Image (cartoon, rainbow, N blue to C red; front, side, top):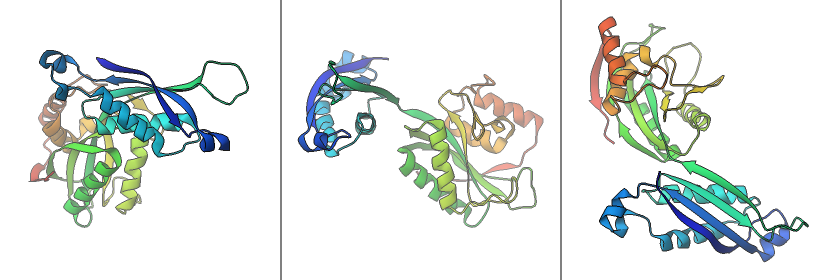
Length: 284
């Protein structure tokens, strides 16, 4: 991927574990690599198609001085998140912070940290069959947007029969696309927290619920942990997942099965006669 370099921006700041560091301050050197597509500005020669180096340096310096952190790890994290959230063209960033005057009592050029952060694209399945189902889903989408940064796309809303435990009301289901800086396990924690806020209770397996939030896909990653499996292990068996996912990403490739989502849906329809009908379209 193309990238823009900014090397050793000198900033005076007040970060460090020692009290003297926060009181007296010291010089830091900040280097950035901004990952983005430079083909458009390369052809147009127009500043609006790229990022302004001067603006980046000015705003990063302001962000650097905004708080006093103990660890430069925390400073680097805050700068990376700030850049990605503030400059839409930037898809990823590498932040290198050097501390030339690190008080460790040994001769050295500098101590420092370097981190890389990128936007991730994930798909989350949402379902509800208790209370005001549509209101529950709208609330979940709003909370997910606040927690994860943005929800670029929302599928149509579908009404479906319950699976597994059938002695319950029909579900409303949809899928959303989210843009997030979270790792998969961090995203799971956020979704579980939102389920808790919306009074989700786990008393019966596959039973009724106010809200159900499932990580379906996360970039092209394959995750296998005790509490999280991505891609979702049963998504290819569920039309109420594949149908709304096709609204958003029909040609997305399933990382494990190596099949397009639309092909998985069509194969499932051939083999099953699921009662899935369009209920409504959620306004974004």
